[in-house]
Image (cartoon, rainbow, N blue to C red; front, side):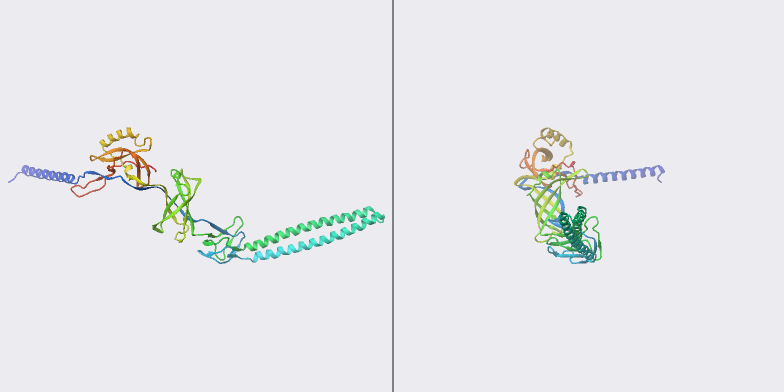
Length: 414
């Protein structure tokens, strides 16, 4: 019969065996799942490369006219709506003209009365002048006294002044009459240009008030076959964009289509928002097929340079930085020769795969974009493989995942 001590010893032995088995299994799992590091590389290639600057903006018609009402009143009738084609001089809306017609009649009456008063003053002047001349002859004959003559001379002068005042009243009444007729004409809203209505801001029965500023009733685009894009470009890139340059853009409505445009203007006025300085670039667009509509957001790419036979590498290679001690030692040597990656002459440092390890080389960069960059000179061998990133090779457990070993972005703004 086993004793208590032997039973306890047996349980301890079993527990120790289980712990050793678990430890061994864990070690085996970790060793079998351990992944060997590798590098994703790319070989330099020759071909065409395009330097670009990207931006965004809104599509607008080249000429947009806001049609307003210079007089206040109630909209009585609308003759056009959204997307209506209009001709210059065409009636597009009518403000209730009843009040303006009454003002015309009233001012016309005042004008006619002023004309009548002027004629009356003219007759009075003629009579006063005749009387004065008659008394002038009687004064010479001594038939009347000089004081009597002076009385009639004064009356003639007064009649002359009254005629002048009457003529002034006529001019004033004439101005009021013309203004009333003009206001009546303004009650009929006409299109100032040939085009298409892209916006209507009023409805029948709505009252418009023109007390302080002219309210906008319609927005008319003169020609939708000619459009333009107002794009904003960062100050670091504006020096590469020039009038007459080419641009391409896409819109969300046609994601698979690329549209072309020409830079028509680079404006000098800067806009600063949260310490970011941008400039407006105007791109002219041919919209003969009327696919583009006002207000669409355009993702614009400005083509700033192009080379047909350039040695190019992935731009991502410029951002790679190894973390190994050996590579750090190589970096110190490369820094001394390349000015810490930013030496004179535009030298930059990138890494190539040499004997299975990253080796730094100094190169001189040319034009480029977000995907590719030109190598214009430097120490890059013709058969080199530039390192893009660190990746984990497949282990025994079949798992494989990229292991990032790159430092902060180091790609140049080209």
